[in-house]
Length: 98
Image (tube, rainbow, N blue to C red; front, side):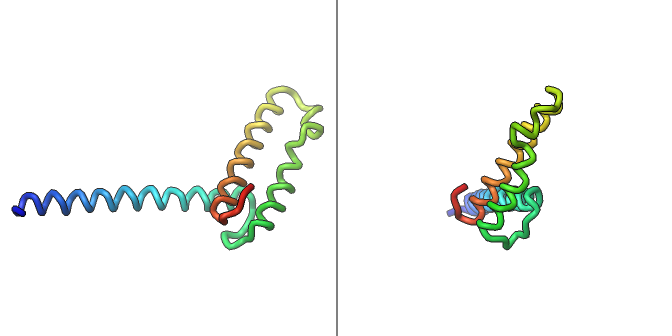
């Protein structure tokens, strides 16, 4: 193997490492954001995450939103989707099903 080939292989390995590292750390950031949004510690159990989700999602129940104007209801539905995504991510991190 020539010097040029060794350099190309080393460079490709470095690029691959950097890409995989970036993808893995991005997943950690999502899990940390999910825990923060739900108000749970990073080491919280799946049951604690579920309880936090149920407590927070009660704010977005249809009967809670009925008296609000359409723009506020739309914003509340958007926030409920963020909460749902955070819950799914937090449960995935813990190896549990939502």
